[in-house]
Image 1: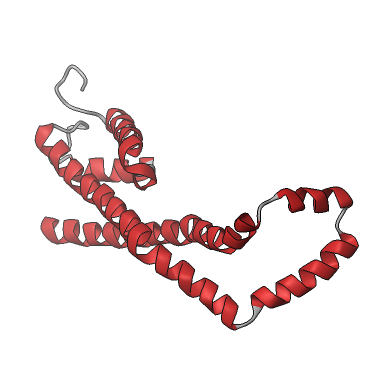
Image 2 (image 1 turned 90 degrees about the vertical axis):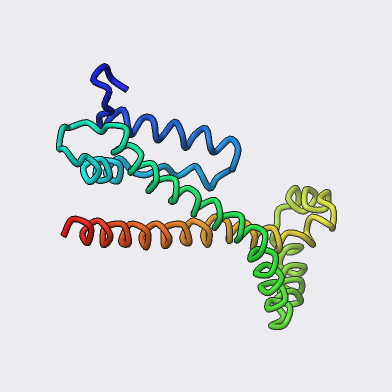
Length: 175
């Protein structure tokens, strides 16, 4: 807060980034995506009911309700996908790859091509890796792809929907 008892746009954004960083320590990557500066500025402008260029405690409360619901939605989505969806998706993908015979094809091509063309030092290095690592590699790669592609895309989808809903709601309330 500045000495006027109100918060300006810069102070609001800096505070929100700090909140997200602190939350990330406890709830993980779901809280690592603070709103953009543009989003915070739009929320600020929409909440600054008296157009003073600063927000008071009531206006700040309005902004925090919107942003906390966004963080809560991200955390709920992240852990729902983590606990419920990822194990089933990985199992289904691995099962599908087994059905279409990817495993046997890769092994047959891999053995002949690898022994014929891979540098000798790489062959020695891969021989040092335990079989259990090779067996879990498809599952690990699939899980990684889900976490780096599916979850961020889901968050973006949810964010877009929430922002559209918030914009529709604020237009209705002002009308």
